[in-house]
Length: 331
Image (tube, rainbow, N blue to C red; front, side, top):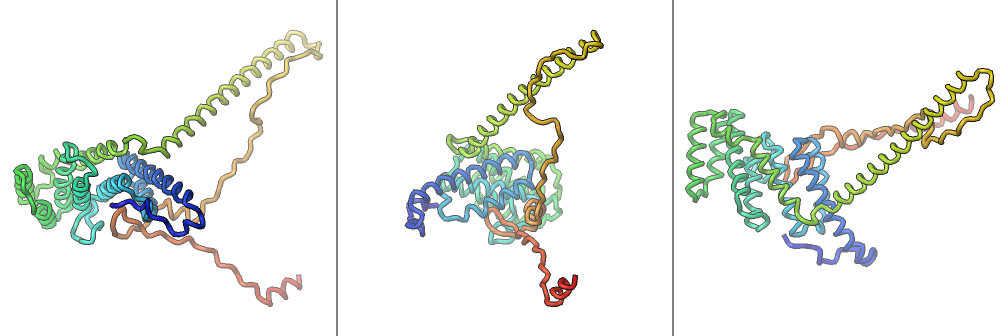
């Protein structure tokens, strides 16, 4: 994928080249941030949150100036994660060929990344590749669709060249013939292990130097706020402690000399906040907000599949007629 950063965008004269250069830098930060969030959601098994962020990222990366060579490989990584998340749903389609399952599609993206020199052809790659090959067959068997499992197997190994891949194909063929979706071999290369392998690849790619500036900057702000709040709580606790001591002193004086009511006491320190309870403001969620956070229908499509959003409902306004005008005048 070639970089578009060198091309002069339309409207450059109106807003200036500096604006667009700054926008491209900020866009790269946003892509890095979204990739990092997707990786964290994936590793934590928070797939609903993953899908929401995936849809937001899919809209964002449609901008032609966003993707550069170093950004493209991160988006391709997120494509692999997105396909694994939907791996158990055989009816979800990511490619033009409707017969290709999500895990097959993930395997295709992984192989393309090696071909584009975006990742190394090392042990981690080999492990994830093998797990995707096995699980793409195992998922079909678990659904009871052994015919589809055979079709997936043939598609994956139609260009088999190495002895290890030929051996793997023979093992999977025998398991399909036995119709045993819980075979010991499949259990050793289970879905959980595939997710862990994909997470390891994501962690390695996203831990590169200067690859997550936006999140790191946000983390510094959070740490600063936490320290400030801790200092404020400490100051308030000290004030409450002094106030309690002064109350005890006053009570002892009253008990010691009840006839003497005119005595001096120390002035208590002012509290940082009032003791009066205030009603907190609670924003009202709109229909649009509910639609975005709730479950949405997703149509099959290409990379980082975008779901269909529900339009926010508008309240219809009542038309003011001349009869209503006469009635209001009669009041």
